[in-house]
Amino acid sequence: MAADKPLSFLHVSKAEIDLPPEVDHYAPEVYARSAMNFRRLIDGGVLRRDPLPCYYAYRLVMGEHVQTGLVAAASIAAYDSNRIRKHEFTRPDKEDDRVRQIEALNAQTGPVLLAHPDDPEAESLLAAATGKPAVADLRADDGIRHTLWLIDDDAAMARISAVFDAMPALYIADGHHRSAAASRVAAGRPQVGKGRADSFLAVIFPARQMQILDYNRVVRDLNGLGVEAFLLAIGERYRVSPAAGPLRPECSGVCGMYLAGRWYRLQVRPELLPLSDPVRRLDVSVLAEQLLAPVLGISDLRRDTRIDFVGGMRGLGELERRVDSGEMAVAFAMYPTQMAELMAVADSSQVMPPKSTWFEPKLADGLVSLLLD
Image (cartoon, rainbow, N blue to C red; front, top):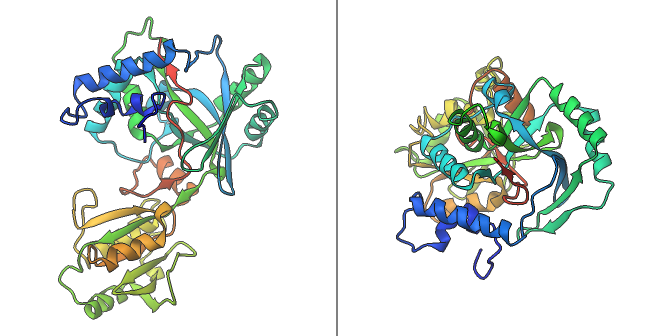
């Protein structure tokens, strides 16, 4: 992806591509090369620092889907006090990697994707900003359009700050490791002269504009069962009916299953739905609790090598391919987790099962960065 592209930001975010292949991706020289490449982009005028504090409006367009958010320095204090709310566990090794990257660059180059509750004034303020000429407008190799508008008017910035400061909470959609690493960096720096280390780079979108795609499951074997025995076993918990073709679930409580060359519609029996628990009532939790664990013997989604996860961008054809190839025995097409469900889990201070959400479109690294000095 970065071949013959010296200005590709992958030279910063994945600096191991510029080193011999035997170099470990977490070796000190990787972070040193990342810092050198970042500084080269600044010194060459490719990246330019804003002379004064500002915001940006950031619009993502993927096909017919459009979402417009605010690029901002989000408060570490708000994150630490849970006003910026989480819904996932983080892995120490991934946190460590992000901490080393931030410290090496003295900057945050990967924005955290945040969502805010519905707020008509916030959306109106950003809509007004997009009426001016854009400062960046590009279509990436994957077809996603990224557009930025500068917001540097003092009155507009003050009003945006007031509106967002008044919100009861913001929600991390994607970027739990980035925000956790930023918090660790801030905690390790002296209070005096902390600079921008008391913040982390974020783009905040209205929750209602955000798009979560299905995050599907494929399993390597039927846990010793034949096809008919497997169908009988899941029939104790689901209403199972053959489908005419690939089945994309139309509502919560339903999933598609591809098994032995055929698609089925599975609808969990209503009495098995734990409606009072925001985590257990997620479709991915119901599948894990009612089928993966009791029938297929998969109780640890993080470590069990018999299960894999397929993002919705790959389509149902990818599920068919992996089963038809013999690599996997069965596939499950999930109904996407909804933003309201994510926010309910975060509000309850709980975490989702692994691979519960697949957000599209993705933010671009390097389009905006936050220097910490």
